Amino acid sequence: MRLYERNPYQKKFHGTVLSCEKDQKGYKIVMDQTCFYPEGGGQPADHGTLNEAKVLDVQEENGQIIHWTDSPLPAGSQAEGQIDWERRFYFMQNHTGEHLVSGLIHKKYGYENVGFHMNEEMITIDVGGVLSQGQLDEIEKEANEKIAQNIEVEILYPSEEERERLDYRSKKEIEGQIRIIRIPECDTCACCGTHVKNTLEIGMIKFLTMQHYKAGVRVTMICGKGAFQDYKKKHKSVMEISRLLSAKPEEVEIAVKRLKEENQNLKQKAGKLKQLFLEAKLEGIQEGQKTIFLYEENLEAGDLRHMMNALTEKGEYVMVIVPGKDSVFSYAAAGKKMDSREFCKAFARELDGKGGGSAQMVQGTVKGTQEEIKKVFLKTVEEN
Ligand SMILES: [Zn+2]
View 1 (cartoon, protein in one colour):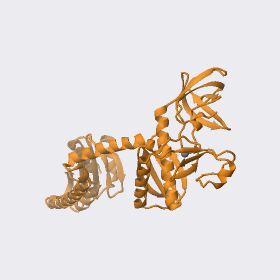
View 2 (view 1 turned 30 degrees about the horizontal axis):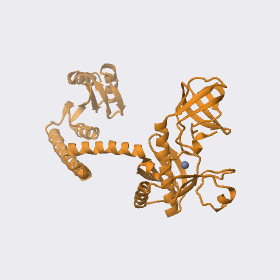
View 3 (view 1 turned 90 degrees about the vertical axis):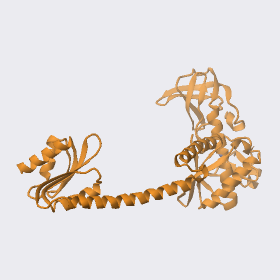
View 4 (view 1 turned 135 degrees about the horizontal axis):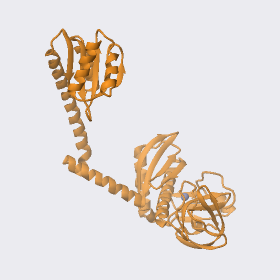
């Protein structure tokens, strides 16, 4: 017997162990009755205990509810089952919140819920048609108003006749007895899951994200305790940003935009100054030299190539190094009268060098001090 269907608030039960078998996942236990909800209809499985055994997963197989536990229980024995109520109640809040939202969307726009998934963090709803952010904002507002109205959530088992007259949402054709979850004026839906007894217990509904998905939209949302925790986390973050930027919490968005703009301007200025600096530096280097070895802190990968092109006009053998972390330097090297790849070989041998390139120019990293690197550079020039 599925005790959760009639009373989703039942946290504890006594029952008889019908069978217990071991498999890869643990011990497969079947009881004569249970409060444990098996994963299904978008709702995750309950956790909890059967006597001392921990219930790790619950699934339905061929109409039977299977509890996977971490230790065995003898068949024929009595067991007390207890579900992890905090986890279950959170799923009940979220599941009911999902009905409310899907129902309101269906009522207002006629779109079906074509996919529903729930985990410990949030709910995902796939809506069969496209909704704008503004329309979703309205649904969210309306759903929260319905919560405050404390509407009773009904569980109905309609007869064949009643069923004919009933207009309800359903994902699949159901044969035999159906179970209807009705939130008057909001939603009527066939569902086997667990729900709270009135809308007030949903607590709150907050939409998180919306994206276009297939022919409609995918909406993520959270309810109840999760919505509060999310608010708490985000509030903390906003307060911290507010402190860092010395802006009012409600104005951090403007402050961040301003900061980004300033940053962009500074980057542009720094870029121009760097260019002037490099040009001045290049002007200071005499032409017609045999070797040029340059240590430069303020270069980036793109500048390195630009610098090399200018320097190879002035010298026969050129090397530029840029310091990185842990005495690793980025380098570029080129020799007009040799295969530049000879540098790579020498660096690999003596400076833990990595890198490569063409006969005209090589790039990579080397390890050592500035003096050590220069020595290997000059030695390689002499030897080639
Ligand atoms: Zn449901």
